[in-house]
Length: 159
Image (cartoon, rainbow, N blue to C red):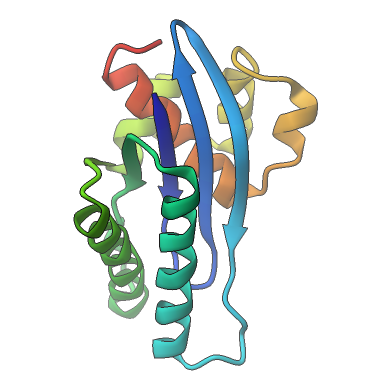
């Protein structure tokens, strides 16, 4: 089963393409989409949507897994993350691909056993599935996207 994990954000939008088969997880590709800083806000959203749809078209995932936005003290930044997440919902509907969203505390608890652990704890857990060398190549956004992908696989009982 192919899963595209997504960590939405307007400035940094992490993704991880994984293939899950009988107790095995293969990381096929990962990265962070970052629109040019000089773009207007609308142009950044459009750029992200174009690149997200290209990821979906090229990978043809069976599922999308996405982090829900976490309401913060700053309503403006929360709204922006929610708008980036909306792009994932649009892609899900456009390509008719099921989408599962995970609250940050939910996917971290599934993987690490605690909602408050940091990314280093996530890396330690992911060493069960891939090499430390591979994990060191992921920035925090791609790492979160990978964690979200793995959470969906766990939630579905695939691994």
